[in-house]
Length: 165
Image 1 (tube, helix red, strand yellow):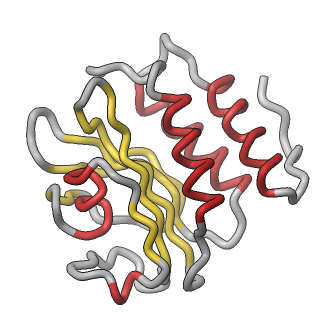
Image 2 (spheres, rainbow, N blue to C red; image 1 turned 120 degrees about the vertical axis):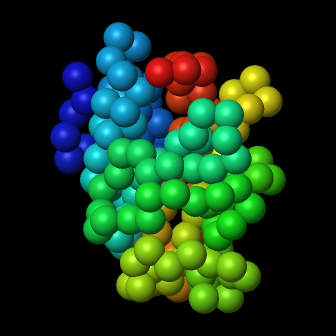
């Protein structure tokens, strides 16, 4: 069982705890969306100064992401690969760390309050299965520490993530 309110304020320790808790929350017999809903809620709890956190999932054999479990305001439901920050992460297979979304070419506005964003692709066996997307109303909210630990979190989930749900 995941403990509540155990985050210390030390970013490295809190991220390490979040990774452990994310793995502990995952239940292999549940649908992917149930597990991702819990991971979204966990990240919403442990990350400060964010206004949206969630997953976009690759639509079956299509270069398009569809909205998955999230915490925040209603969001865009379909994002083509290569479009916006999420689509760029999906097409490139690389984390996108965007200090100012208004300066990102082709940024897709889902929440006009968002100012910075980090998107980590979920890649298993060479296939992009989706992305973890986190937005903040602050410019430059995310940095290399966030990138490093969110990539570790996704890497910890990949062995648990089914190729098909």
